[in-house]
Amino acid sequence: MAKIGVQMMMLKNKVEEDGPYEVLRHLSEAGFSTVEVSQIPMTPENVTEMRRAKDELGTDFGALSAGLGGGPNDSLLESFDKIVGDARRLDSSRIRIGMMPFSAMESHDALLDFCHQAEDISTRLADEGITLYYHNHHIEFAKRGGSTLLDIIRAEAPTMRLEIDVHWVQRGGKDPVRTLAKYAGLVDLVHLKDYRIGRLDPSVFEALRAGDHAPFTQAFAAVVEFGEVGEGNLEWAEIIDRAIESGAQYLFIEQDQQYGRDPYDCLRTSRDNLVALGYRSLL
Image (cartoon, helix red, strand yellow):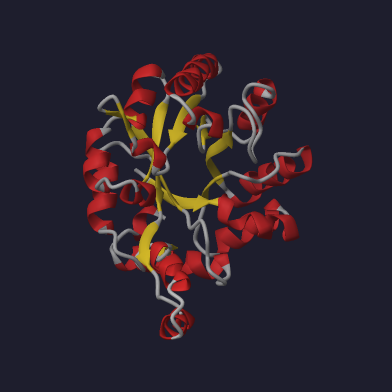
């Protein structure tokens, strides 16, 4: 059965303040037993606390994160053995790449270089009993030569599987349900993140009346927000049902920005909305 959990990236400040164990304890008390780890320093101390949470709280580490080069997570190019060791210590058999290196966005050749590196790493991880995944943003739905970047990645790194982020699919101009159906059988991991249209600040209208159009134009262009699940415009019952039909094993709640709300409160809202939709059994 698929499980709904939490992407810990949205709690990285809480981890910095209180440590991983206390954050995972708080999540356990809130009804979340499954997490995906990203942008949390995988120091020996932090990994020890995570293992303690697994032993004492039953925390399931559905996936860990790594990169190919710079970024907030350990690099598979530089710390392969460490990453494998961390995964084994936490009984996690999934590693996900949260984003391609910025350099890979510059040209087709650079994208292919990333793909070939990822494919090499994917086969090495498979030898260790670990599966590699790629997480999309909107940029992967840009087209080159009639194919999206995501389809190029799939073709050039065929053993790497997918983590579909439905918010970024929507922002990339695609339909989340159709996208999950298109990649059925390849999508073990899914990010549940709503697509909300925010409110325009009253100050932009004051600026308009004063003849200054720039604040309104900027606010209008940035009106899309990351929302708590069920607080935006995505059709969650269709998305979750299709994700499960497509083979998803873990669905992680994520909200990149909380706009001043406490992230625990945001997670509580998402959880309550998912329970109201009938998905209590997946938590």
